[in-house]
Length: 82
Image 1 (cartoon, helix red, strand yellow):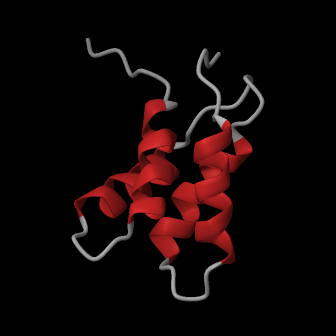
Image 2 (cartoon, helix red, strand yellow; image 1 turned 90 degrees about the horizontal axis):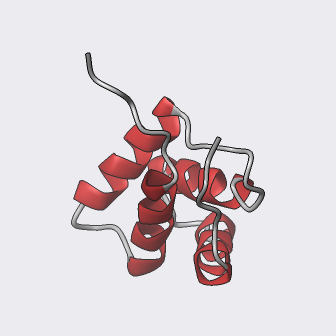
C-alpha cells in the first residue's frame, strides 16, 4: 500500500481548488484524489494520475491546483516495468 499521505498544506490547497468555481475538471479530479489520500491505505488511480499530469503541464493552472496535482502524483503506486 501507499507509504505517503496527504499533508495539511496539500489538503488545504486541494480544498481551495475543489471549492473554486473557475477550476477545471482535471484540476478538481487531482484535488479530489489528493484529499482522498489523507488516510494511508489509498493510492492515486491511473485516471487521477493522468488528470494530475495534465494539470502540471497546463500553463494556465494556478499554484494551488499544481500543488494538489503534484501531491496526487507523488502518491501514485509505482508501476514495475518488465
